Image 1 (cartoon, rainbow, N blue to C red):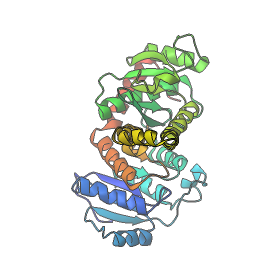
Image 2: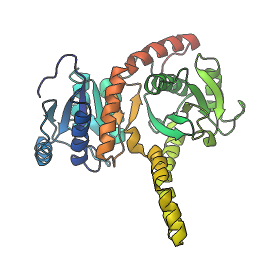
Image 3: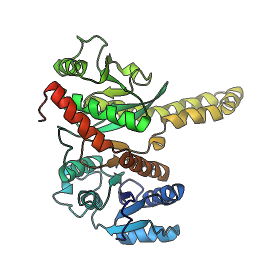
Image 4: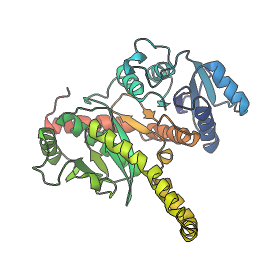
Length: 348
């Protein structure tokens, strides 16, 4: 592996992660380097022979790109704990270890989400004061974008965990979106503070007595309205919302197509709206957001969709760079420490 300059950000990329690896990963990586004029150094981790073959096909040799060989691949059927057990030489394991050893500043993968989360937690460890790491998801809203935490990392969460998700999400929304004092909403079955199960009631109490800009309970219909900049929930509910939202663009496209096929005038009408519709669907496209952050681990990890295109990979890499530059983890460490003292919470 060639050495990068001391001040250069180094981003490790799982070259074997995703449904279309290594092709899409390599194309996205080269696109990110070209777009930024080699602003950072990229380390591709995976089967070196396959990586080199793809690079030769696209004539993608670059002085700011190096390769670290990893013989094994963790696919979607492998257990998340395989990163430390049966497949310690996988591209995910090797890539996260590079960050642990200080040879990289961030790790990007569109591979097995559970394995990436396990590797991040078990290899990098948690930020001091964080009980559980959380994965976020971005949602377009009527006024911009909102962040939902948790989107699937923790299917069972205690009030303390949800409280910490709110802290980490607020830091992220402020740093990455430029939102001053982000509005935090607790996803619930009603707006009244007396609604919900015991976890929701206790979480509401914790958030109400925190320094966060807590606006109270929000309902499912409020997510796309943009009522809150940050929506907090457990990963069971959050992942269902995320998967449902991912189905919306294809559903709408099919309905527009069906409408256009019912008559010539309707087809002309849809055709005249093509530019507007393209802009609308762009805001719903996960590729525009790249990947989602794994917050709470002692490092920077961006996780992408298994079907990520080259464009999505490029945006994941750019998001990783921005996360490093804006020192998200340092901000989270400070905020968690201060707010845990404020509410007298002891991490589990």
